[in-house]
Image (cartoon, rainbow, N blue to C red; front, top):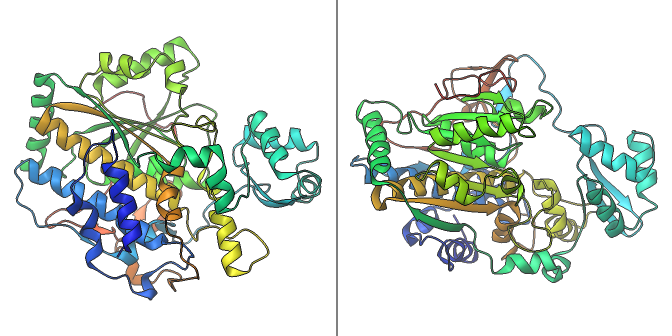
Length: 473
């Protein structure tokens, strides 16, 4: 599935200094099969290889976790076509219209010296861009205002105002950029570890072993506190929920995601807390005390400002697995910058390289938001690996990933021409039984990998945010 350079990139990312060593067999397991052109996304990068590799890594980590708990189970089987399709939309509304993925202003605009992308799905991000551009809130007015700016200057102005924007850079410009340089030698997963109390380890291992022996899904009873938004983190917790994890998602009162809520809310209880208040942080700390896993997508330094640094989290829950992700990496001048998949693709040269290779006159990003989904599956794989080592070695782990770090896997060896002919979905790609959501019935894609005797699924239908109480059942 993967060409040699991408395999090496994965291997180096896992085996680099200060990461937890990964067995090469996990990383190479997905290299046994060739992806047919008809099952490969059309891309100038190895997008389908990333999809299949990340899904395979996740599937193998789940298999190894179960094996470490005494389960005799055959290795997983990954379907490359389905893996690639899951990197896009995983569902199809039946008889109703899904909400738009983007608001009316978001998108690519031509500035005086190139292209810039504005991410304005969130109201406060849109307001920041409009304030800087000093125009009315229409696409035409925004385009006219953007055309008078130098891209670098407009990017800095919008980011400085608290908005989200990315000037399109080439691969070389990103390599020369201080943030690009900071990522070159950064590990794919940055690990740190601490000893966990033996009694907690024994208790949690017994709980999971009991769930498995009882015939339930393998992650039944696992408590996952989800502080992530949009796609990458929610994709990771959606997968954990599919195998039985009890995922509790926390959002502020003013947060709205539109289409991602339909995709990513399935299988999760969904509550809210006001973390700008002392009471809200105190409630969060109680949830941390009862959690097995904390997943957060806050920018570096955000939890620390709430008083929840690694030391505090360990004092609240010494056996906690702490998995974090951010946009642009954990070191470098842009470490604390807001970002999303589409922005990182513009910043790091992916969209420019796509335009250059295809001869297009506008940015050509990846055919799917592969940085989000790739990071999501790698995050889930890291959590599963951390669980295994909690039960076998008695240590809790902190894992940190980033969208830009995942992008580095693709930047190591970009293709020189468009490859892949995977187009739309076929009826055979979907599960036979419709899935019910709060908006209406949907057809859901078949799961991208199978484990003998285990049928993943979700007990809680997809629905609006903040419908449940912020506590563990």
